[in-house]
Length: 304
Image 1 (cartoon, rainbow, N blue to C red):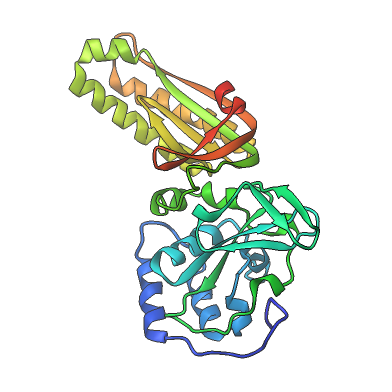
Image 2: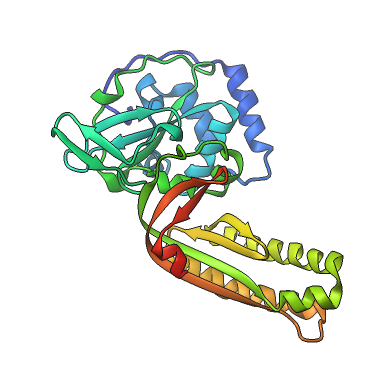
């Protein structure tokens, strides 16, 4: 039985191309879960189930949390197995007001013809990300997106949950907002790390050795950030800016970073040593495109 309620026709998949792309996904360094389930779904599902796939609705069907499905479907979009959609919903009637194939066309203001009202679009509320099978893999009959029943906001994969994925940050770096736009995210936790004592370290060690220490410290910190579901937004000198969906994950990461850094620092055996300062703050911010990357802007970021 299909996840959605429209249509019941089945088209045929290109099994060779499908298997080639699944094999490509299994060879990646990322540990992608449920690749076999994904193949079976593409081969055996009705057409309707392969259009605008909602990973949060799919997760309980696969008896999984939705979080492992985000990298799975993002990677499937990277390989051309799936197409990625960015949709905007009205906060009042929940209806779909805009349907886009890339982030560049998202706007902070939209209009709902049903409610006859303009509204502000938020990255973690009004923006939904969904996936459809690529037509080269399987040509399905697609309905008008505006005619499909819509899930409540908390049951949709939202834009912030996608841009806060390491795979999206690394492999979809060209999928950006228009530089003229900024979308509000209602709740994001931002972390800054900064080396204390780095100026003296450069003086003591010289530029080449000190630079290697900074690079090695980046690796230590980044590994912990990713292990706690955070993503690197940018590096600034010897500082790192990261973002998290949950404040608890940022706090747990900060504690783990200090433990790992203390062990790292002991190996350096510097006379005065170096320390790592960490600032965390949570609240609303603006998602913007700056210097060809997605960034956060606002008072909350400045406080962090």
